[in-house]
Length: 276
Image 1 (cartoon, helix red, strand yellow):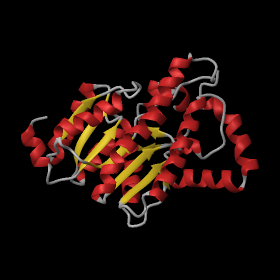
Image 2 (image 1 turned 90 degrees about the vertical axis):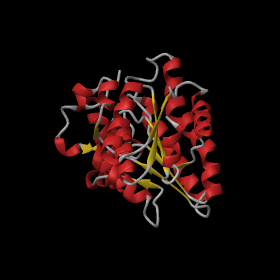
Image 3 (image 1 turned 30 degrees about the vertical axis):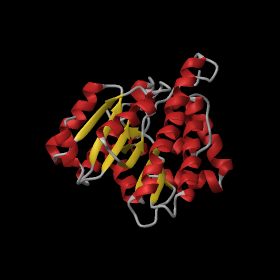
Image 4 (image 1 turned 135 degrees about the horizontal axis):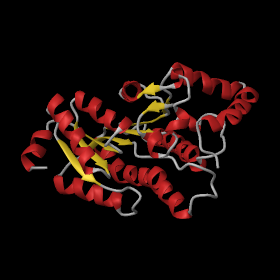
């Protein structure tokens, strides 16, 4: 990214989005650009990141810094922050969106696959937040959005063992961060979407299964992101957001009628998850 574009962007806030190449991450980029943000796009696929950057440039005149990074690598977050420092970019909004699912029972994949998932979905989220939070506190303004899942709020089921567990961590992490930073101008929330139309299910090989689910169970990324941004930029921010009335209802059932929700989830898990 040229220095002229960086300087032009100094008049506008910057947002960093991980997993920005597709799905919910790409939609965060589009909607943040529409709100006047300049963007730092982080993901593995440079060509897809460039397509997102070109799209927001055409639609909104947005400057984007593309950082190609594999967050499963332990040095990736430091490399991202080093690049921000080189370009003299201060991040006002951090969207920790990168993530994926690992199909099957816990004992089936080798440990390296589990370790990579934990690195992407837990460790990298914590490290990027830890590295960028002090600057937000010093400037007295910042927003942190952690993309969790409704899977963390409903009864567990067989398969994809670490996915819901990692998302549960993100919710508690967000709640604690929100409390710690309430008096420092930094707002934090975890968004917990249900089934959303993205590439997520193609990547974890469950597209054929989830395609059998009824249409009313599905959300689109535009709605998920719009609901999240409305919540994080509100005067009073909730530490977690659940888009969609249906999923709010499912969580209510789990909370107040667990004897009803838990058996239903367990019986139907094979319809949308690889459990072996």
